[in-house]
Image (cartoon, rainbow, N blue to C red; front, side, top):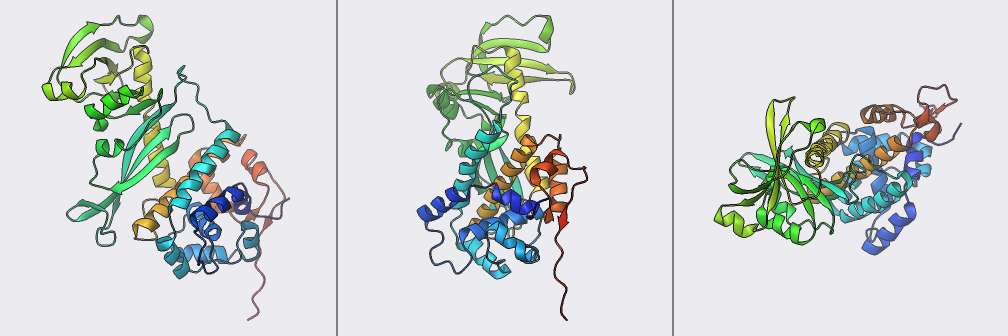
Amino acid sequence: MTKITLFSQIINKLDKKKFRILVNEKGTDKHSKGINSWTHLVSMLFLQFSASNSLREVSNGLRSATGNLIHLGMKRSPSKSTLSYINEKRDWTIFRDYYFKLLGHFSSLAGFKQKKFRIKSKIYLLDSTTISLCLSLFDWALYRTAKGAIKLHTVLDYDSCLPVYVNMTDGKVNDAKAAKEIAFQKGSVVVMDRAYVDFGMLNSWTKAGVSFVTRIKTNIKFDRLEERPLPENKVQHILVDEYIELSEHKTKEKYPKKLRRVVVYNEAKNETIEFVTNNFTWTANTIAELYKSRWQIEIFFKEIKQLLRIKSFVGTSPNAVLIQVWTAMITILILKYMKHVAKYNWCLSNLVAFLRLNLFVKIDLLLWLDKPFEDFEVVVYDPPPRLF
């Protein structure tokens, strides 16, 4: 039996010392009147874990925990108006920087690693997702004449399926233009869809020693240089494996080097898919499987949109939206860490649902993660009787 709630035990997994260092560096607690950065963080994490729809629900939900707040490192529950004010005013970058501190911490503990590919290089999945907003409330989030939206341009680490880069822009920003701001280290592999085919950018990646795999656009013109031998019986879905060079003057000027084109047959959809890459050593099947792994980032976007509070926002300023985005990233990091270390084979959606039902139940977190349906002695919070 434990004397603190599941939510308190989750919060206690966070490295508070690293957060204090960030607070001192950024000075986010200067002139704060009682609601410090830690209380702000815990409140926004509670919004995510509890699926609260408003700041009023966050305030009232935390207030209902009464004595349990001390285990969260909080003196009192913030009011709705205070949360609204600090969401607009407190520097959002502290939550972004803390996410990356936690990413390194939890990655070292969990040892996230997928062993599908025999590629020593780091594999990154690049894509963006659009979140629709009401233009009259979010007038800075331009998208269409009568519609607002933001884009989250994201780079996912293939091993952990967690973001190593997130940049928020308005909905009008082109994917390839946003990708030009991302710096990949030498030797890394970037997998992306054809929205990112900008040959000037791809040429700069090649010069920097970055490999890429993407689909080729249908209007791209090229000349065939040399056909490579096709694999034998095991992978008969490989139809073409060849070297090409761009033939149109403008595109060839941007990317003068040769490329590798691989065509595969997708039996499920009865269609052929054309890939292009600057790597000439992998097997054709590896290239096809690398692109297939890009689906992981689509799953990630689906998870954060369905399981977390990231499609509707409790503040309308860019600062408030970014705070909610980055606390959502911290939440998904914690959830994936718990799923990874648990002995029980959790589906992430079930883990989130069960946590929401038991946030203020007093039971050992690790025991509950391993054996969620065992009969343990639990203490359910029982508020004191009302005196009137």
